[in-house]
Length: 236
Ligand SMILES: Nc1ncnc2c1ncn2[C@@H]1O[C@H](COP(=O)(O)OP(=O)(O)O)[C@@H](O)[C@H]1O
Ligand SMILES: [Mg+2]
Image (cartoon, rainbow, N blue to C red):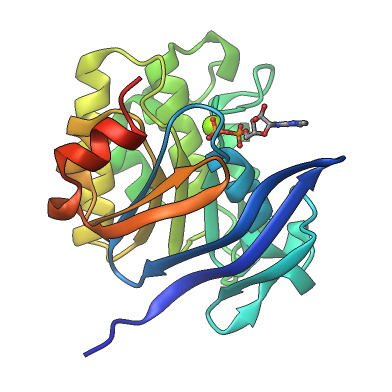
């Protein structure tokens, strides 16, 4: 039986000025699964996510989410459709408090909730302890937890994370892996993850999609990511 795609990118072409960066790109994110987008630095992973979020214009192609073509939906409205986005480098607001950073997502909630849901503090107890602290005063790992918490505030059905373990201490990396797995298996969130750390990707993801120079070159279940693909497309 064919599984349903929650997010489906097809024939996507994107340019930075004259530079053709994404080429006829196709990506399917199966509902209920964690898909890992992989590839060396500079192959276009972040660019693809920014196209999905509407932060970059695309030249052609479709980005379907729940049967809706997102390329016709403004960036502001995409989060409200149920997409949580954790950008590369976290991009939390350094001068706002932890609480204020979290509350930024509230207006995008369909249920009109005025408070940050408790389960976010249960997932990240450290955020509850630091509600009044400025975002910029948190450690890298704490900022990453804040960025994930902030993405969850919109009550997403799809969570997109761009290199959430980049520059983070190993013990927090493991914790973030546990959180992603819990969100995926217990809450049923569909996840699209960009990750370069192979052991982390193998532990957390069900499927992979490999990019090389702006093209999708291989896709499959994680067990099919063999040494030959790793050597050709991932190791430096
Ligand atoms: N704002 C930009 N303007 C021009 N070129 C860019 C810009 N951002 C990224 N690029 C280029 O696009 C390519 C893909 O970058 P990126 O999507 O960041 O790759 P990845 O996330 O896989 O490391 C790279 O060659 C990069 O130099
Ligand atoms: Mg990137």
